[in-house]
Image 1 (cartoon, rainbow, N blue to C red):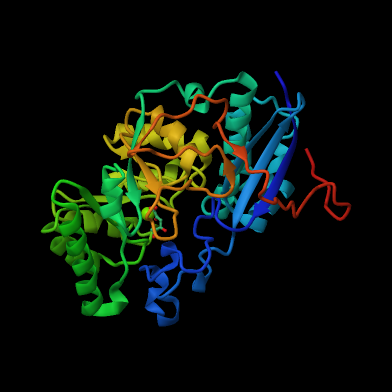
Image 2: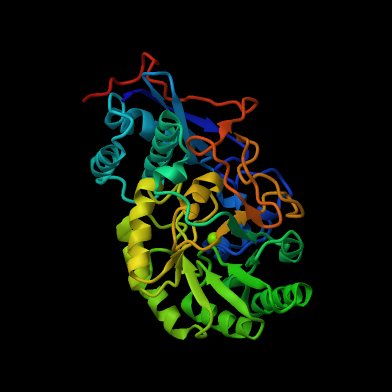
Length: 399
Ligand SMILES: C[C@H](O)[C@H](O)CC(=O)C(=O)O
Ligand SMILES: [Mg+2]
């Protein structure tokens, strides 16, 4: 079995895994509710407070037979530093099969400064690269390494400002970005409800509509919003609260209309974080495979959710989510983030980073049967390796 010869970490700007890193005028940077919206100067644009400050991190792992696997996540230069200067030592020299041990060592060795956020993004990036490499070495798609497909194709809901077009494009539902948070008062609340009502008029009664609240609300505002939105048939309220306030999630679940689902988890990580969300009443968990700990940790999170009778619908993440969802009975559908600047067309979610990135047609996708995650890096995208260990100034790694 080949062993891993080298780990390399690269940074890319503009789209890719850091999907908030878009040019001017993109819907994803329009007036969208966030926790920072209590400060008026940060309301109109999320880039104004640095939502895209990290950029994309690409991790490559090269085996001694020359096979190269890669994974992508959000992490930029700080993520690249963690991979090259710390995590690489637990991967280089190891057999390509030993992903569990490598994951365990990366997590335990960084737990004194990690546990969530950037460090888990970096671990996820390495983990995705390792699964990609193993698939390429074995000449099998990752979903087969995970136990095989439990469904023939994936069905999707779409995230973006045009659920009316998403319906025409064959998606099963549309998730709108919530625009106004508590600091914008009752005018903002009314504007939110008017936008939802207008969208319901356009899509008709039998199409799912959801709201993505990107951690912007408090329990009282979310309760008022949800009860008013219940009349319009809002299917779920996503990530209304700060992720660390698990107790507020439990309180909100008690206050929400019975038929409305509470969903959360894209900014949560590891089995321990998701255990808290599951035990505090979240109905659907939404781990991001590039942020929660990678495929290795997502398998554990998913088993835990299953034991709680809960579904896992991963956040974004393109092919990394698709291979997972295809192989899990408790992941009945997937998310597609509409990354066209006006959300009027289906374009690859990680554009322009990946070559051969599959996209849904008529809201459905048959996952290609290619080895690994089945995608390549677009050769036209320039990769920068800021902390190359061939750099003579770099401290030597140990172990
Ligand atoms: C639209 C949301 O604010 C965010 O940019 C994406 C997201 O949270 C999701 O796809 O879910
Ligand atoms: Mg979300």
